[in-house]
Length: 341
Ligand SMILES: *[C@@H]1O[C@H](CO)[C@@H](O)[C@H](O)[C@H]1NC(C)=O
Ligand SMILES: *[C@@H]1O[C@H](CO)[C@@H](O)[C@H](O)[C@H]1NC(C)=O
Ligand SMILES: *[C@@H]1O[C@H](CO)[C@@H](O)[C@H](O)[C@H]1NC(C)=O
Image 1 (tube, protein in one colour):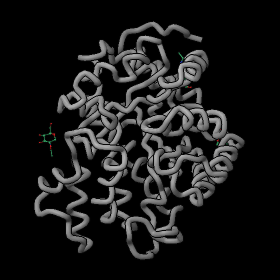
Image 2 (cartoon, rainbow, N blue to C red):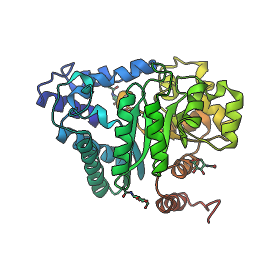
Image 3 (cartoon, rainbow, N blue to C red):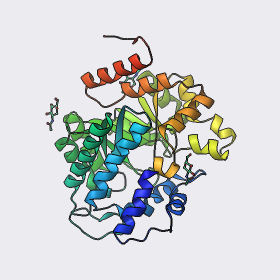
């Protein structure tokens, strides 16, 4: 919420009229309460991103306030993902969101986000890391993304991701593959949005071609039982987003009705798949990780402890820091670790 208030203020400051008069109207416009297609969901970004692109203060401040927001939700470690290209306006082709060429480079975007995250870490005493996204429809950006990952590898950036609309682009371009190969070579962790709306073949590609370590969403894996069995046996980690794809919105609106009971996460849980619950697009869904957990508890008999331990185990922190994070959680929950090695 604070993000969108900020957007209105920032866009006023920059002389870009926000689409509606008040903060509430604006929030209304960018949030949604009924299931949208992924394309519609992504279109929401176009309503506020133009106000932020190329604005140094805004980029840094949003990163900082993101950490503040997470700390208030009780989060102790967060990995936040974004596309640097969608915030820069210098040497990015095309300049995103229909904006004009300016002087904020990709490199500076990552630097500013890092500063915002690090200032937030100090002030709110939590840990924040970032994941840089390649975009499916812009293969020409991917090699630049991996170079940024390399440059900032030990400076808040922990992984590379591939995001965007799986249905718009059905093939994995060679540039994405090259970027992921380079990431693997350089010890940069890899995750891919796959199988959120796309077919199982997108998941297969993510694993076989991009050599991803984790799958973002992955729900459509259930349509390919052989692939699903293989991934279960490999303990492949699925990053389930609690709010973008119908887990939250179906409850809110009842629109998915009985479908909600068939949400893939229910199957994942039954089959002891390796997954974690994550929050996605908290701004458009006006929700927090807590909302997701509450619903998962209510409908899935899911416990916060198991969720958080799985999430920490699949974090992209270096081993030593991961152990520290896990021992904090075990301590907080009064649990004895399964595997205290
Ligand atoms: C967002 O959520 C808060 C708290 O649940 C609620 O008070 C507010 O009205 C919501 N905003 C919108 C735009 O729905
Ligand atoms: C980051 O740390 C790893 C492991 O400590 C090291 O191998 C790598 O060279 C470092 N990368 C940079 C860019 O400093
Ligand atoms: C789940 O996946 C993560 C990330 O790949 C891994 O670290 C963890 O050990 C896996 N959990 C289990 C129970 O296999």
